[in-house]
Image 1 (cartoon, rainbow, N blue to C red):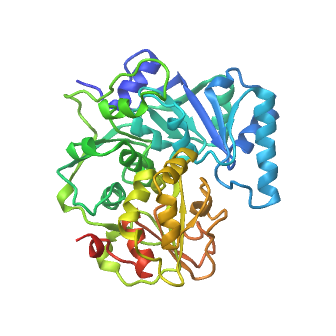
Image 2: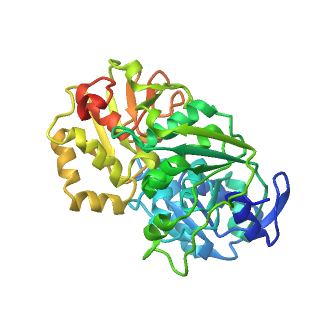
Image 3: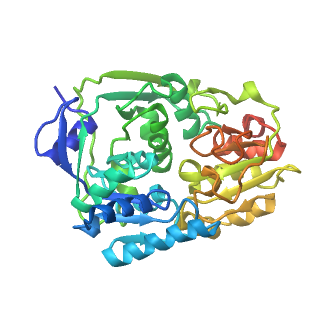
Length: 417
């Protein structure tokens, strides 16, 4: 019997064939933490009196509350900088961008790697054929110190999407469709592998959206096979040889979910939980106070390019704040070079720095009492983006742009038909 992509990666690291349910210890290629989790990991290391044996495999990223919105955040940033300096750990400071975007851009991610991040959306890096998963700060601290971790081999679920997406449908609509079908706990501790002709045709940036939100259905990891498109994206960024990495043809998955691309519409996740998914067309007309285009799920170059298909030459509706924040400095520079920043500002958007900021209610777009936001970010739990009485709708950058122009939730097909 063949192996899934997850089993191939973990077998390679363990030096033996592994099977679902088995517990193994294995080497970790990369461990990272941000300003919300690295200080906790530092505290663990210092309390145990242990250091980092191989700092080359560890990275800190200041991305969540960056630049610091208050003195408490600034103090955590100082703690990270001081520890990084004394231990030899590399650090991406304020302005570099969101960890899950920065690390592959800087050549630190390759197919076949095992990556731990002290953040649940570490699963984003599965789009490059890496076994990337989020862990708590204590587990991250030990992996930082010793370069090893343990885990239970997950069962695997194949999510197959075949066919051609409609012009107005983006990867965000696809993953919301999947989450709405699978449910918030339907893939608990499973390795979700995204397969099919639709996924093969997607850009690497779009594949990152699929992997990124796999955790919203409970997945341990969200994997996309590493093909020629993956290697071309990584070429010039990473050192050493690159090889394609795919599941075997004769593999038997624990579960298979299949979707027809042509049937997927622009989708919306309703406030409270990500798996409350409905077509945008069913909820048009709900007024919004803010639109956010950004985060590790919706702040890449193609996201802003798609949003500008609607925003260019139009204006953000009176009374609506439209905040756009690139996911990284590289994305920001390319937006500047391509004139996207000029066009977004011309439409009435506010451009933020590369930061998580609004997504987690840290700064640069915090919601007030009873306010409504339509966001391209990852989660819509009560109080995540500000006041607990506020409401968060999740959707694609195209839906976000249409909503910003109309001032109410709007199906993007009204502009692109």
